[in-house]
Image (cartoon, rainbow, N blue to C red; front, side, top):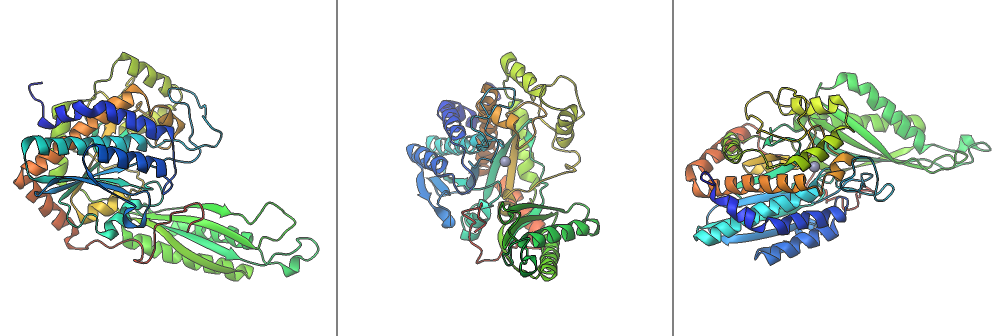
Length: 474
Ligand SMILES: [Zn+2]
């Protein structure tokens, strides 16, 4: 290829092994902080590729870090490998068909995310070695992106203290640079304790913890009118106190996620939610304990890195999907609503087009930011080092995140092609940074400007440990 970036051939040379790694991770979907098999696979692959490997980093048994190279700038490439509950699904089936009832599944494509990021890191390492260039590449296998915020703990532990630039990606329907829009959030568990009693014979002796949870939720629902328009509050009842209506529930537990565009707004809202919980305890004669279990910062952009990544995307063009890939994507699209498909175009700032089963272009860098957004623990990384992320096209246009459709496509040839494609983009961007002191200086200056007014503030207290057992909220 005349216009080929030096990174691409290094990615091509090893792609088969990493497609296979992605498939093996897909086969063993594990929830956040429980990714023991995935972490072992990642550690083994890093060792096989000659990386210096550390495991169990930052108090997280499933955090894996590998480094290669010597001297020079340090480029961090971030991977993930956690799955989601309830999204078990047969690969290649264009209809909901779980492999295991209520089983886990890779409904966010993190099997691809981790393997693709490591493929990029290995390509950078191989390029450094082949060219005798000083520089280091550090692959970080980051646990529990979905709800545990593993990267925050890596940041807190200092895993990025000597890093110059961080690069990552996420599977998506279109290729492009990720627009840095994500909400900060804090997760809090609320435990209510009342008094058990016979619900008919001695109700006056009981105090219901479930009543307290219900009243707390009603109270928070009344807050919604009086909070910033882009703030979000959601809850899940983790423990409703039991299954016997004739027992007054002595214990109940609810988990809250509070999100807003900026961290100070999140913390203000959390304080208000805590007051509502105290009110619910007062009203019901119960007691309440609350515990922050995780947090994430909003994402900071980095214009020079985004431009460098966009140049690499445009140089490479869209992934080489073929007719068979498009046929399967069309089958998936028949399970989607037209508004799912239209929403995908809008999220990438693209005009809505008919009959586009798979990405056939590169989304423009300019354009309006997304109007709706979630959160990511890459946010915390972006506050401490210049960070850029790609969106790599791995699934049918319209595929919602966290869906059985995403799980179904996770081992498809199109997913492999999209993963290899984005690995080329990430490796090329990392190599550009290593080889171009002016680009690195511009990235640093951009980051310094964005953090000058308000430096990084960790969303959770220094003594909050990783919630290794998310189900119990410990
Ligand atoms: Zn994800």
